Length: 282
Image (cartoon, rainbow, N blue to C red; front, side):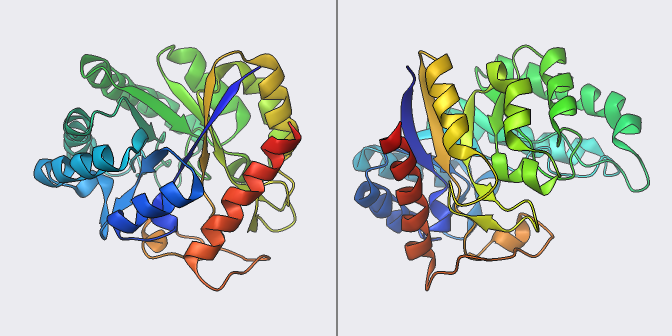
């Protein structure tokens, strides 16, 4: 039996960090995947700002499950040096924050290039990033984001086979938006899952809905994971149920909504409650 521990992208509930911490406590969530705070992406924080956030986290009794970074969410057509400099800064932020994981991606193919054509450059960049992360005692955890090299089950498996130290953040909704059935992806990748992003979607149009309301097989995946694992597994709630400030910086496509809420706080609560309801049945 697994021990599920809840985390969340609290910037979906509020852009204000103090409010994020209060909301997490109200929801009974003890971890946060830090992505945005007070209008800044986590990767853009200064070391001084990170130190202030660390003090607030400690005072609130909230831990960091991961740095929800944008690293690797860039085109291979863009020179790597500038991106690598930001990644080095991200590792320094992890040291200040006491964070041991960075959520990251495996790059978008350059314009006109196929994923297969991009493989060698993706691997070259990941070798460098993983070596730096190992030196910093930080684990890189790859997310199956739509459009990047590792967006389907096969290319995720390829990356994980190439790099034993690379973790994997399984996101059911992202697989749906790539036309991949999440349960089939789970069957191929279940033994490599580091943690999960709890986000569901509809296969018909990719619209994001609460966990268990879509085609992501979230309840069944969590049941199987619970039966197979004996360790702690973090479940990070990522609602995406309403457009929140900063989302336009994270993805290009417009979000479709079949479930609407009056504000981000209400949507965040609905997403958390949907996950808790599934866990209660397990």
